[in-house]
Image (cartoon, rainbow, N blue to C red; front, side, top):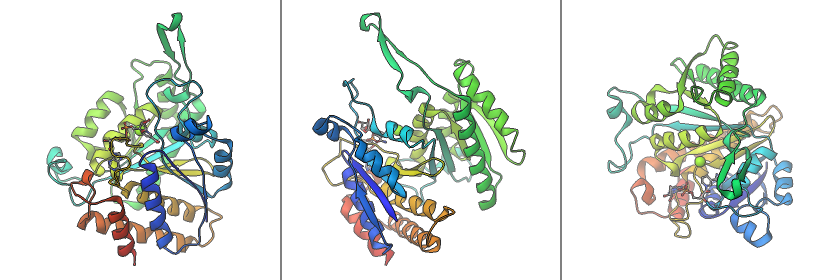
Amino acid sequence: MHLCVIPGDGIGREVVPAALDVLRATGLPLEITEAEAGWECFQRTGTALPDTTLAAARAADAVLFGAVGSPSFPVPGYRSPIVALRKALDLYANIRPVRDHQPPLADHKRTSSSAIDGRSSVVDLVVVRENTEGMYAGRERLEDGGDTAIAERVITRRASARIVRAAFELARARLQAKSHQPKVTIVHKANVLRETCGLFRSTALQVASEYPDIAYEEMLVDNCALQLVQRPAHFDVIVTTNMFGDILSDVASYWGGGLGLAVSANLGEARALFEPVHGSAPDIAGRGIANPFAAIGCVALLLEWLAARPDASEPAALSAAASRIRAATAQIQASGPHTPDMGGTAHTTDITQAVIAALA
Ligand code: NAI
Ligand code: MG
């Protein structure tokens, strides 16, 4: 397998090497092209996403991405390279699964979802986020001598239809894999954003009618944020536009043990990029305490995606390696060591070494 690996900035450079160590330990044949992107790259070279990186991403079987740090102030010529990369590779579906963390994390971090929900229930949901348009289309400008800032939110029927279809296909696949009835929650704010969310909503309902075997519901985004906190086990597949999905997936990640464990797949028709949900975490970068489980989980997802491709070579070996990584990470998540975000005192490398030992 040929991977393009983009560690990026901050803890991206700590968790991606950890995930690669775990991948190498599976013994799978591996060819890696390392490429750069991000704020540091921009400062050094004047571009946040070099053409060589884009070419390397296109040439590889899949991309493993860490995180990039983007300043919260405008910088001429700078645009978030991950947003640009998703768009350039047409990775339109951002799939963000969250499973109840077992065993529950240290009590100071959270109460179990069952307790909050008031019944025995498990969180097992997926946020399916549109990845190419919406509020992140990059259409912003200043007017009025800089006193008015305008962002254009772009919603198209085509992008809405394909992301909602991806959500329903995922729900159908989950129907086959699970005992309970799957459900798609279509999240929007069409009561206020009548044209943009209105188009997303009407397109989504049209697609839903093509899937009579899959239940669905609509939910306004603000209520969805509350329900994700109050009744997370209510959800199965959530499909929504770009920025809503970005925010809701951070909320949802809490139930899976927080950002240190949250994984995501960015999928297009033939390409895929896997990345932790978290960012470059400047508050802990360089201290060696970043949680590598999200990045390691991304490697497992990546192997599963490669194994499922119609032209996969040695799919059984890829799936077996993914299962071994999942089993080893589950074991270490249960037993420790843990990094500080999970209530422990271990370092990134301690987790990596423990996972590799558990693989054997
Ligand atoms: P963040 O995800 O980097 O961090 C949020 C909080 O979670 C921080 O307290 C951090 O220490 C903690 N955290 C995140 N990942 C962790 C891990 N693996 N282990 C332990 N703790 C972890 O989000 P924040 O602070 O809002 O943004 C920081 C930078 O990251 C910004 O420049 C932002 O633009 C960028 N960012 C990049 C993303 C990407 O590359 N896909 C996604 C989100 C933010
Ligand atoms: Mg985010």
